[in-house]
Image 1 (tube, rainbow, N blue to C red):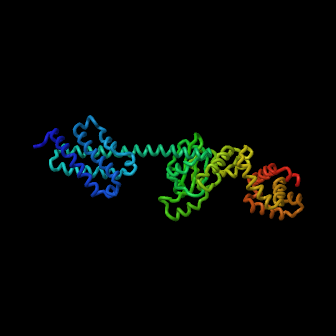
Image 2: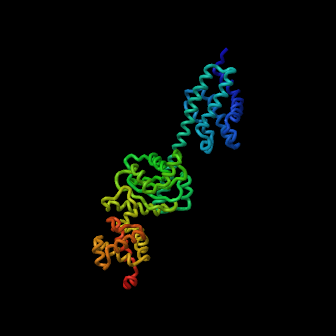
Image 3: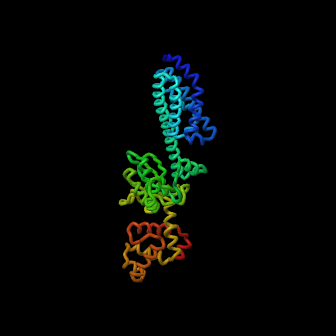
Length: 399
């Protein structure tokens, strides 16, 4: 004779302890990850299983009055359990629990009870997915806030002792040199696409949005998942300019400026300062490439009052040339003053044009810039002017 619902509920309540014990035994026998857990974590998982059984009984008593009681099952789980047990493992836990209950129901359960456990298992599975989705969303929002904080610290140069730990918390895979890329924010920013593009090139990025300005901190990643060995080797050899060129479609229209490479992420503020200064004056170069290196905008940056640009021009161009040979400095001055004419320079210096050509080649060898190009000539002339201004008066009088 079929049991009434009240009799079924009373039977379920009497069996709840036995069901919980049997469930925990089957979890240990069938799920290796559960058996390998520390005792505290196993106990927490056991509480979830027991809560699930108790919640099912309450739900079976009145399913309409408590439609979301399934979600309460996971209230018994401590926060760290959600981080250590994956959604897949949670669904395995639900499946084992349902199997134990179904097996016991064969001994005397009513048809409506079997249908109830099937319906409830569906509800509890959706509840688990909802819990993990909310946790992932909260983690994503937290990561975004932390990433924004790290990028702001880099841009402001106000790095503190906590910066390395914050970077580690973000899962930064970069190692070695770092460079900062600054451009405009597109109307529809696809952060995931930027990260996928970077990963394909064996690079990692930190992304910061500051109104209309989009900032990427770029580093070469230690590993590249989903890329074969040949592609990894090719990607690892890419320069920061080549990486920036591949990332360029992810930016809005306008100027895109790449700061110089620095040895570590903690020192990225130096690259950021150069990139931001270059971004502020990039419009002064009518035909600036995209991306353009901040060091190619040294004259504009120096004219705008950037002390770092003035120091860079003097220390990387003027001082090395002066230390190598005053003859090279004089030849370069004359060549630039004479409109980059070899013949006019040779006449002024009373030498053969081939001698001028040789000395200009030596200039390029010493500092890496070629005076025969219009853009580089502007950089070199700016360096000569600033270097001359910075010279002590005593040195100027001796000349």
